Amino acid sequence: MCQNLTYWGPSVVRMTPFRIDIPQADLDDLRDRLTRTRWPRQLPGDGWSRGVPLDYLRDLAGHWATTYDWRAHEARLNGFPQFTTEIDGLTVHFLHVRSGNAAALPLLLTHGWPNSFVEFTDLIGELGADFHLVIPSVPGFGFSQAPTGTGFTVDRVARMWAELMARLGYDRYGTQGGDLGAYVAPAVARIAPEHVVGVHVDGGFGFPTEADVPGMDDAERAEWDQMRQWMSGGVDHHALLRAAPQTFAYAWTDSPVALLAWLTQKFKEFAFMAETPDQVIDRDLMLTNASLWWFTGTAGSSSWPMYDLLTLAPGGGFAWPQGQKNVPSGQYGGGSALMRRLAERDNDIVHWPEGNPGNHFVAMEQPAAHAADIRTFFSGLRE
Image 1 (cartoon, rainbow, N blue to C red):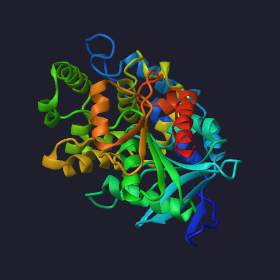
Image 2 (image 1 turned 90 degrees about the vertical axis):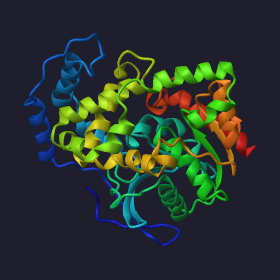
Image 3 (image 1 turned 180 degrees about the horizontal axis):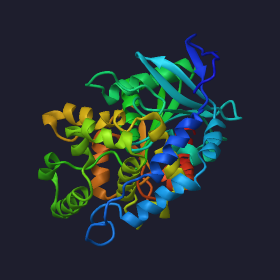
Image 4 (image 1 turned 60 degrees about the vertical axis):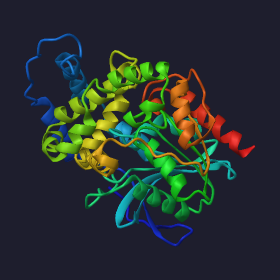
């Protein structure tokens, strides 16, 4: 899957140019498995109340098997310069898309779960004139090597990313991410504050916890109750992937429809303002992400944030992103007065817009608006 070439960065560490080249036998196997799917009956219930509806998934899987063109999307991905390098004992895959403006600010983008570097495919064209973009694949996702033991932390990823930026010769840079990337982006600033100019995240700097309740007024407690109702809906992937990721990985690795159903379920829940995920995210972009997960067999290895983040949280509970006040922070999605108060407790918030469009994965849904907000935040830090 990679060319036998080498590239030597400023720190004289070997980097290897990488090119995606999925064997035709793997494409044929995928289509064969899709066409031989043993479909279940549709259970009673309305819409998505019992999970992904049978008719919806059959249509999406049929498109994947017959009309979706992996080779076209593979060629598009290969249009971005890609490399691999070894950091902290793991092979890391990353995109490095330099701006035509030599003075552009380097920007480190970290994808979320259940996603991949494909999340930023449309964003690259929107940001490429203003930033030198570095887009690594998180260990265990796509073409980056999976962690070899338990106890793998976000801070370890952050140290790896700081090392990657140093190898590329970037002394000052911004960090950005949503979902899992919203954990990693501020962690890089905690690890390397002398190199990070600012942190921009998509969906927030975390939600309240039970420990915050005593300090809430009546209006904030009412908002907290609504948040808990929202967070209790859907499939609790944190609990599921903490308890038995190996068990579910068998189905996701052996059956492309099982994998597609799982990813579609989560994208539907993350696209909470849409009836179906493909109303806001191009279905071919969703299938490119699913294809990458399928061809690399990383549905199981991508689950480490769920069991390691949860296990390492105080008391074994769910841990929201840890804040930092070393550098300024900004958020794409804004939020209520309660959310801002709690964000400012742990972060130096200088950017809090209201009314930006999109759901959870805004880079996929609203790349132009997302890019505009990122430019606004970082331009304010460079003035």
